[in-house]
Image (cartoon, rainbow, N blue to C red; front, top):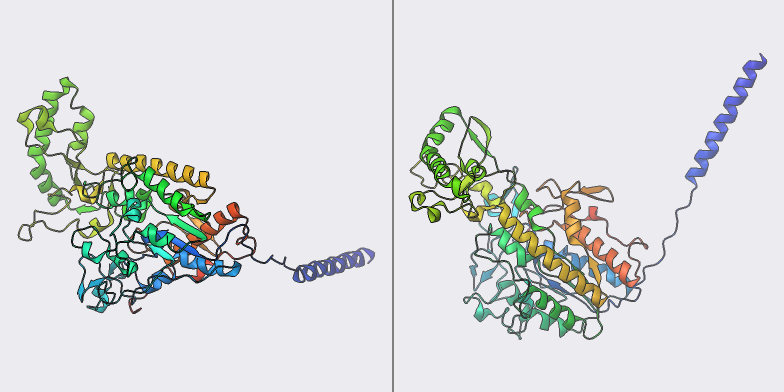
Length: 509
């Protein structure tokens, strides 16, 4: 009996002890956060300069909702807590996107992309034709603008006079997005419009397009990489130095960001190199069609190997071979291959083509091109199979190396210039690397660089979603805290990225 009551007493003691612990946990008081403070920064007059990333571009267009979620606009709302003033953006007229000129839609400036169930599709494919109402000749907004992000701008464009002059548009010397911002001073540069506002604090994120333009064109030479060195307005180093020197001349504080590895964005990582499904009969027919080419490669190797100018490794890489299955590699042009005809005229007819490998990056628009017919009347003229993909559809390793070399050089300039000027610095390159390699968790959400499902990148595969822009805004605030002693993070004023959408409905107008 005594043993029984001792056991019961122990249980009761344990029960009350557990209740005491629970009561203690329930009454635990949360730590009170300090009020927001600006540190040594003066946010009373905030101006942001940059390109489409600064403007809030998303889903292949600039539209009202995306601009509202631009990361400079998010920052301005937080700056208001610590003395920040008003922040004006050159808002578009609707949520369709696209630009018009005197009532006519500008070619290449189309409405936004939307999710079509399987992937990105044009808005008009779901809701029918729309009227683009943002007209750069008829209804431009009135500045001055705090957000001077100009989609498409490269570093040297920020110094270019007349870049916002409507009269220069047909000459290819003006940007229609900047035309909307210049107002009564059409020849003023982006930098001049910024300095005219005497900013107390500036943001500069520029240089992405200096390499991205080359990458988006598949490295085909139509949009070259900006030279590293050259006078201001030509070379990146001197241009960037001039921008920072001018923006800081009156003692303004600021924050800058470097250039992310553009080859890691979904535009280059979504389309596989081997998306071609073939049955046995079709594979055999394609191989027969390539037999003369393969024979020519073997003949060239036999004739040229002794010279060392054509190796067995390259010859093997250039042999075209298809098989029954779902994962045949596309055929591509590769300008880095040896020009066999230049070595021996007997092989002049052999094109510089091969099948793609995992080291090649196929651009996102190729998903709608591979498998189409070059000749609608010829079922054998399949693009990517019988017809090699042209240079613009793929970044081969040599082109990726050019991008990497330029990016490294540009980022060294940005980092050193920012450090010398005492500016806050955001490492966007590392940020993108984290998104591409496992993702970044913020609050209840983990963002990755996967198209559609990752949450960080919009449907164009290049620009962030609104949620992605919110993540970027937080990184800028953290950098400002570290340099200027503000406390956006410590005061709990980083934004909840879950309050920002990852996509917009086709019905949003």
